[in-house]
Length: 72
Image (cartoon, rainbow, N blue to C red; front, side):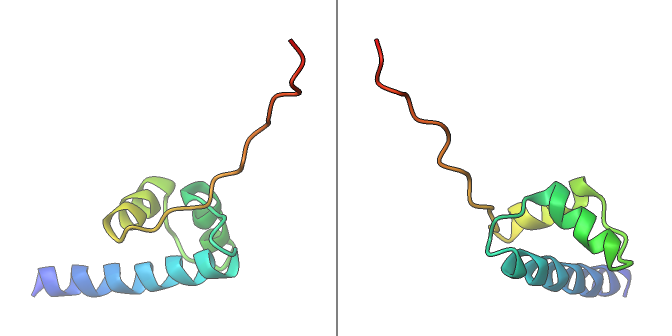
Protein backbone atom coordinates (compact mmCIF):
# COMPACT_ATOMS: atom_id res chain seq x y z
CA UNK A 1 0.00 0.00 0.00
CA UNK A 2 2.74 2.44 0.99
CA UNK A 3 4.87 1.51 -2.03
CA UNK A 4 1.95 2.12 -4.39
CA UNK A 5 1.38 5.58 -2.94
CA UNK A 6 5.08 6.36 -3.25
CA UNK A 7 5.16 5.15 -6.86
CA UNK A 8 2.07 7.19 -7.68
CA UNK A 9 3.63 10.34 -6.21
CA UNK A 10 6.85 9.66 -8.12
CA UNK A 11 4.93 9.28 -11.40
CA UNK A 12 3.16 12.59 -10.75
CA UNK A 13 6.44 14.35 -10.03
CA UNK A 14 8.09 12.83 -13.11
CA UNK A 15 5.18 14.09 -15.22
CA UNK A 16 5.67 17.58 -13.78
CA UNK A 17 9.43 17.40 -14.34
CA UNK A 18 8.90 16.32 -17.95
CA UNK A 19 6.45 19.17 -18.50
CA UNK A 20 8.95 21.80 -17.29
CA UNK A 21 11.71 20.02 -19.24
CA UNK A 22 9.70 20.13 -22.48
CA UNK A 23 8.73 23.79 -21.95
CA UNK A 24 12.43 24.63 -21.57
CA UNK A 25 13.15 22.91 -24.91
CA UNK A 26 15.23 20.30 -23.04
CA UNK A 27 17.66 22.92 -21.73
CA UNK A 28 16.96 22.99 -17.98
CA UNK A 29 18.87 20.79 -15.57
CA UNK A 30 17.80 19.69 -12.11
CA UNK A 31 18.48 22.99 -10.26
CA UNK A 32 16.45 25.06 -12.71
CA UNK A 33 13.64 22.48 -12.95
CA UNK A 34 13.50 22.39 -9.14
CA UNK A 35 13.30 26.20 -9.07
CA UNK A 36 10.53 26.28 -11.70
CA UNK A 37 8.51 23.66 -9.81
CA UNK A 38 8.94 25.75 -6.65
CA UNK A 39 7.57 28.75 -8.53
CA UNK A 40 4.50 26.66 -9.33
CA UNK A 41 4.09 25.79 -5.65
CA UNK A 42 5.41 22.23 -6.02
CA UNK A 43 8.03 21.25 -3.46
CA UNK A 44 10.88 19.35 -5.14
CA UNK A 45 14.51 19.56 -4.06
CA UNK A 46 17.30 19.51 -6.68
CA UNK A 47 18.61 16.10 -5.49
CA UNK A 48 15.12 14.58 -5.78
CA UNK A 49 14.68 16.06 -9.27
CA UNK A 50 18.17 14.79 -10.22
CA UNK A 51 17.33 11.24 -9.09
CA UNK A 52 14.07 11.25 -11.03
CA UNK A 53 15.76 12.64 -14.15
CA UNK A 54 18.52 10.06 -13.95
CA UNK A 55 16.09 7.19 -13.36
CA UNK A 56 13.97 8.20 -16.36
CA UNK A 57 16.95 9.10 -18.56
CA UNK A 58 16.13 12.81 -18.87
CA UNK A 59 19.20 14.91 -19.69
CA UNK A 60 19.54 18.59 -20.37
CA UNK A 61 21.23 19.85 -23.51
CA UNK A 62 24.72 21.09 -22.75
CA UNK A 63 26.12 24.19 -24.39
CA UNK A 64 28.66 24.02 -27.16
CA UNK A 65 31.24 25.72 -24.98
CA UNK A 66 33.79 28.25 -26.08
CA UNK A 67 35.92 27.42 -29.05
CA UNK A 68 39.50 28.44 -29.42
CA UNK A 69 40.41 31.51 -31.41
CA UNK A 70 43.08 29.64 -33.30
CA UNK A 71 45.92 31.89 -32.20
CA UNK A 72 49.06 30.17 -31.16
